[in-house]
Image (cartoon, rainbow over all chains, first blue to last red; front, top):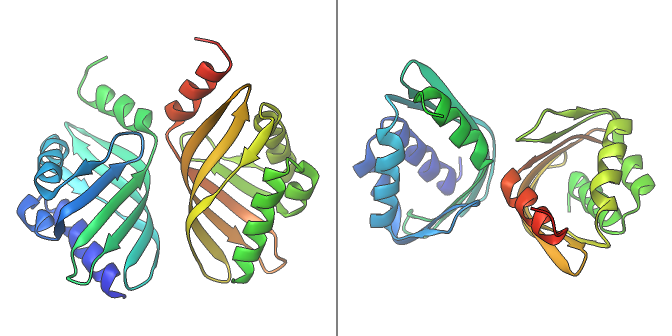
Length: 129
Length: 129
């Protein structure tokens, strides 16, 4: 594994444990978190709040990586981000791009996905709509 | 460039020229074209029809690649797929995954993007909505 792959794997493992402190400890202070349908979320504190919101809705989190390519500084992966919500699982196909700096901290986390695939499942699982 | 990168670069160039015959000639007969919000489109003839539909709506097509990682068989890229429609440009951020077989033909073309980012711009540019 490259250095960037090791950092990203540890970050995803922290997210899966819903360990927000451990996840945020792997982010640079000026990290940019870019969910491509939305505006970037800049800064570790802002990312912490976002992580707390979407991890807080899930009782279990499982983000299997189906494919990954990497250099020492960059990881591109395909994932299936799974969230247990109530009795069901929300499953979101995602393509992610991560940049890791010389201190081993994530400076860019960019995810490509279909927002409606997320919101429509969330509505169904929370009994809304 | 790896062999897969050469094939994918030639494919994107054909799409940008709106040369559907040249683009389809680079696809395996059983290619799977997966726009992740939708069901896979399987088979070169089916992909031809889809390409004709979305390229037909555009007077110019420009798909700059902002990042790419590759092996001999696989390409992952980040693109900004741009379509000139009427007087304006539709711009769609995309993460793509391509698999290329031993004959130099594309067997998988998978794109991750936000469908609403596409449809909302298309509606605005065609004067609908």
